[in-house]
Image (cartoon, rainbow, N blue to C red; front, side, top):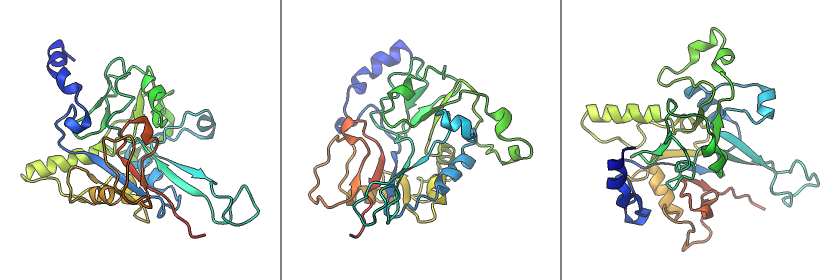
Length: 281
C-alpha cells in the first residue's frame, strides 16, 4: 500500500456501512442457510474438499487441530427436553450448523495482518493472497469464528498419491506449508462467471453459478447469490427474515422470524444468514 493510496483513501476508510463504506462494491456475495433443511450429511464439506483442493490430513492431525476443512458441520445435542431419557443422544436427533468463513464486512482478520495478505475485495469477500502470507497466524487468532486454517506441513506431498492427483481442480492452486487459507465462496467460480458475463456484455445472472456447497446440498438448504441484487434469491431471504447488513443488533417487527447471524453482537457484520431450526413439540 503506497502512502498516496493511504492518504487518498483515508477519508473513505473511515466511512461506515450506512455511508457507503470504503468500497464501491461491484457485488456483495452472501449466503442463506436453512437449518430446518440441513440433515448433517456433509455433502457440502466433501464438495468443498474436491472443489478447493483441500488436503486430507488424517485422524492424528485432525485431533491436533490441524485439519484443513474450510467448511465444517457442527453437531449439537441441544434439545434434551424434547422427549426421551437419553441425555447424550436425543430422541429427535442432533442439530447441525454448517460453518464456513462468514465473509464479514467488518472482518477482524483483515487489519491485523502485518503484510496485508488478507483484504476486502470489491465483491465484499475477505480475500487471502497466498504468495504474500508469511504465516503469522494473527488473522486466525483474531477470527471469532475460528474458520481460518494454517498449513503446518506440505500436505500436497502425501494427500494426493497417484492417480488421486488427477482429481485436483486446475482452476486454483495447492497451498504449501506456512500459508493460511480459508473459504473463498469458491472465488474461482465467481471469477469465471464475471468474465463470462463481461465477454457477453451483460450482468451476472442470479443462479447462473453456485458455490460448491450450495450446488451439492441434497436438500437445497444453502442459497448463494449477490446481495446487491434485490431480485436475487438470497436477497429475498434476507429481506423476508428482516435481517440487514451493517447492524450489530436486529430489531424485527416480527420476532417469530427465524433468521439470525452468528455472533452478530460482535459487529463483524457477517454475510451468512442462518434460519433457525424449529421442531414440533
